[in-house]
Image (cartoon, rainbow, N blue to C red; front, side):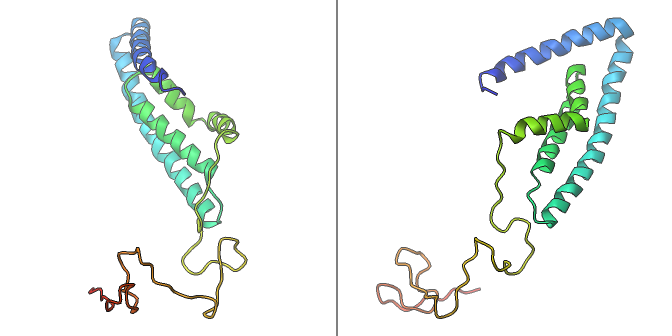
Length: 176
């Protein structure tokens, strides 16, 4: 979405909300209209809690399985946006919020975004503690004979490994 659209939306959405409030208020009355806004906020909060916890559980399961939970993360973001829309007073935002709680709508948004967004995991994503499994292309396994530590003359921590610094000064000790 172009950034130039944001000011237009900030103007159009409140005007649209006011127009819908007036129309619905004329049809069902003032108090039922206000009650409808309060009920949708309460119902939206309950839906947000339930679907949010379900999504968090699916994200954790995908992470434990070592997979990137891209779809679940996008669903989580859409559910969070739905919650914000439902807590915003207004019938138009409530309608949009409830639509984002519908799994078929979220799937359609996911299919639209999937072709346009790439989710990249950092190395070690989904791994528990401990060494990386052998054969991982991001891991270089060296023996003691193949590894050599050289002091870095530009490092502010030079000399902390027991070696003299590049200027011949004695090693510094870090006190814990």
